[in-house]
Length: 65
Image 1 (cartoon, rainbow, N blue to C red):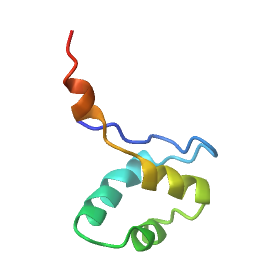
Image 2 (image 1 turned 90 degrees about the horizontal axis):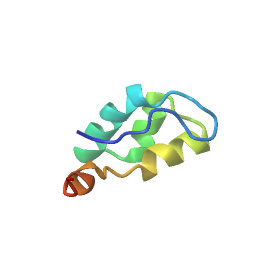
Image 3 (image 1 turned 135 degrees about the vertical axis):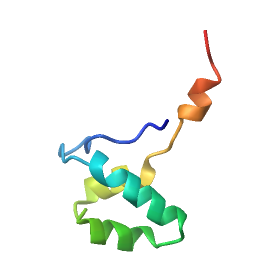
Image 4 (image 1 turned 30 degrees about the vertical axis):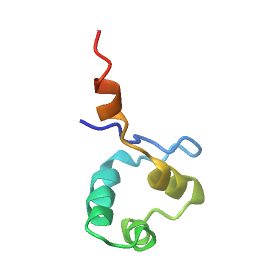
């Protein structure tokens, strides 16, 4: 379970459909810039959302009621 960006917070472009592929390819060692270019994410605002998203679900799950 992860918290991924659904839309760019600045321009509203849909990002959720690209985030999983982006994350997998970067984990395999590909350069983030190249992956973003190939996925067609060109706006600075969208690129910053993709690059700075952090999965915090594991941390949040520790705090059960």
